[in-house]
Length: 277
Image (cartoon, rainbow, N blue to C red; front, side):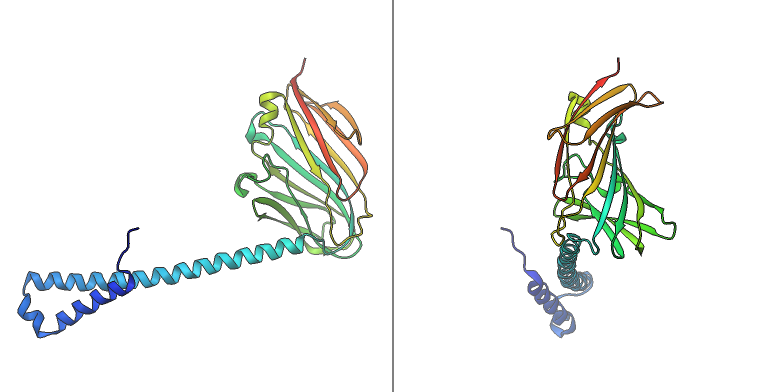
């Protein structure tokens, strides 16, 4: 392992040169260009000494800031594991299969009815690889409150380990049924479906560790195929109902619906994509 003199070595060199420049010995040893060279060494030593100590201070501060950020993020995720108010909810999810990975989009629409003032909702977005999700910038999150008009929404994507969690902050807190929507891209979500004609989607219902888990939610998922293609959907547990429709622009879509999904329920869908005949 290569080692250098470190701050003490640089400080010793700086002190030696400084003493030489300020003493009569230096005048006997060097003159003219030699004294200029010794002066240059003095300036370089002083600069290196300052840079070394500054780098160590900045490095220590950066490590401390990163540690503090991780602590705050862990604390935020801990708080978000439970809602700040019990609620019931109707969820309408639309997953759109694009002609390419850049066209894969998701629309998360919900009507949330809180029993007390509700300040936020948190959920995990649909991504191609949950442990290696796309970057925030490429997902282009956007949100809106459709009603009541007095409420606003702020979308805050955060990471939990390697996972992405989306926080919808309501300002002010909502006290009556709130109709809100979050839209985002999920680049490459349906690449396997386009390449092989088959893929799966897993949806897990929210589980609140602090709740009694007696609440139910109405869940609807719309699977929209690209123009010129048809999509077939089945839920492995044979739960819910599925209907298929043809759109006005030549697209075809399937709607899966279950009126009573309970916290902790897991739904696995098998999808097949084929060209329309």
